[in-house]
Image 1 (cartoon, rainbow, N blue to C red):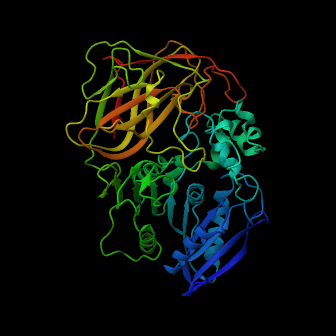
Image 2: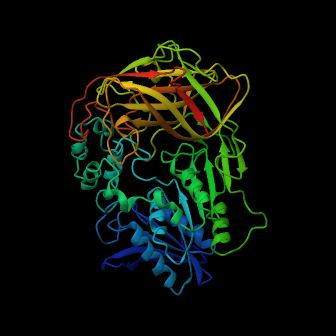
Length: 541
């Protein structure tokens, strides 16, 4: 139904430097000229959700330019994920600012792919850019998937963006596809051909090929205010608080961080899986975004400046305003991993304790079988990888080390970045060390909070591969991303250690080979040490 006070213009062509044009739909407010919001997407500029979003911005007094990125939808060119989106974005902003219906002031908005390309655009320093709203923003290569390879579930996304319009994917048995080897022909196993998939597989270190799609190493060059939005269970969560902290450290004013109890689809449901985060989980996000735009695009100062950080504390199910991330009063919590060498499964003797290990303890051993990887609980779609799932059953496996605290005698808050320091060795030419933080409820429900992993060949970074010497002990720091939770009394804190989390990460075959064209793996017999001189431990904040 037509909306009063809003004018829509469809398939407006925006010319670019190389004689191709992008297709954009315009949504204009009643009062013109107006500041503008640019939205760019590979998922189709048309449709109910895009139309509603553009309408809300227009009713707030902003002209909206919603454009298909190069090679997608009605835009010309070839789609090469992220590679042209920085320069293209700068040109779209310049075109928008020059239109008679625009005041010359432009902001950008977008989530996921549309979040990352805002940063790539901002690196070009468009003169008209005033602010950005970045939701669930992906990080640089290898940050979210630190295996040197894309997650197997990325082939689902490659299928979704194959061709020019979103593809239907429910007619593919994706879990079977994810088990396919070699990785090189996983696209064929899914029934299509993907040059983009194979191009990514061909670059397993951080070489120059990745430079056009990176932004976090240059984030201090971005000068505009940014509203950073994500959820604690967003499967790309790590980038949002990291980007906020980096911009603050660079002295860029106007940074805001908003983190809710959400997955990748922010602010859409108060529940994820079996967990209900309460009636306050959903907020008036439109009002928050418009207030941010008014402040930084229209220079309309609020009567009471909002707090730089607004976070939802899971468990307490309440919102808190803070001055920084991590919050200054959060403190640091350290828990030590301890056992008598039999921490295999939740039925073993693994203990998580505040007290450092005072005497030598035997190492825990487990065998990683590439043909029988530890499952990571998730739906097949790459749209949301995992959530607050119950790992009670997975923790019965002997190739999962489990370290559990005593029941808490009082509530415990864990707020901030999480990491595990592990001292490990392997019999193989390579292996993965996976760590997971779990909230164990009194009824046994083992709720995943966050997780991360290190592939030993990349233990010192992704600039080059480092050989792994069988039997040598390595200290590795495993980033488990961030959490914000209040564990009630009687709950227990748990850390899992394993060597796979499939299909979130590709399975390490243990050969030390290229992993791309190989089909067969070897058993890796791995050890975790926890002694006074090799203290394996969990650190929050």
